[in-house]
Length: 205
Image (cartoon, rainbow, N blue to C red; front, top):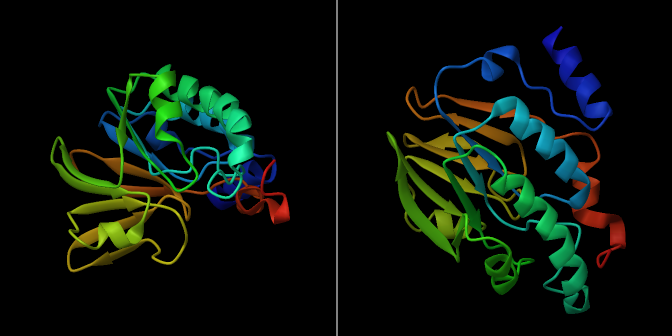
């Protein structure tokens, strides 16, 4: 039944959140990455359901606008990223971390909100009992891996556990990390999100 609910929700552009996550008593980190504009409304509802205490976005905030290649799309990027930052900022999260991706503009993010903490390349930090390393890039992660390692950019390094260290790719899944028990749960993105990330050749839209 749970698997059917996951598939049905994915097929209509939603993320299925199990009841035990919604009704938990433990604080959690919500980790996402490389989010196209079409996912923003779903993300808003997801945050309402989970009500995470911490949010980490590992870059490319408007991933259907490939700003690195299409500098003329900066205005569109700015308008779209305002929507995302508003969603994140209006959450009940205690801390919001955003890693800069290759398709992000630091100055634009700084102008929009001072509630988020912007991470340029990579950073190590502690959240309660967790030792974390976060970056948009997996090759930055492996320079100094910590207990939990969060990244995106591509699927070159997928979710895995190696030598007692957990590696979480925010493209492969939406990751929920429990701050006390250190348990990790994976939620599936809606169908079609990867196509939106790639834009199938419509890079500047």
